[in-house]
Every structure is written in structure tokens, then in C-alpha cells.
Length: 118
Image (tube, rainbow, N blue to C red; front, side):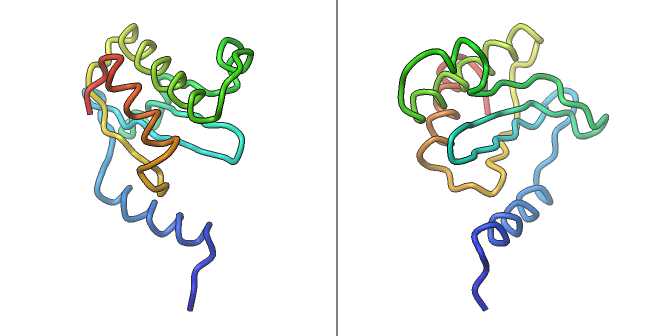
């Protein structure tokens, strides 16, 4: 029996979350991608708190013209900048069930180029 797109992503997400978890020293960087926007947050799973977050809805990114891929790259650079200022050097990347290509990959590459290690 075929899964719908959402059921398939949820199943992949459960498998990923069973293997990775964020700690205080190495938090989890979780990506959410919708049809129009992209968001990322850095989460400490032990305390259950979001440490920092960035989205394509933020004023400086939303006001700039560009493709969705370019916006994703800007969000990746912004989250790396916020992480550096919060004292976070390394994270565990959680693609959240999405395939690692396109906007998810552009966000990850931009975060790596900005100095975040994962």
C-alpha cells in the first residue's frame, strides 16, 4: 500500500529522530520546509527548549528579492550567525524527513560556509 507524501515524511522523520538527539553541547538543528517558506531552529532536546530560530519570514530576508533557494541560503547564513553569537559551534543536522537536496541542501551549505560545524 502506497503512503501519501505526508505519511512517508513522518515515517522517515521518526526513523531519523530515533537515531539523533540534541544535547546542550551539540544541539539539534531542525529544518522545516513549506511550499513558500523555510525555517530552522536549534533545539536542546534534553531540556526541550528552542535555543535559536531563523525563518525566511524575517524582515531582512523577506524584503530581499530572490528565489526560494536564495532565501534558504540566507536563512542558513543567518542561523549560523545567531548560533555563533549564542556560543554554539557544532550542531546535529536534522533534515526532518525531507530529502537532502534543493533548498534543504542550500540552507545546510550556507550554514557550513558561515562557520557552523555539522
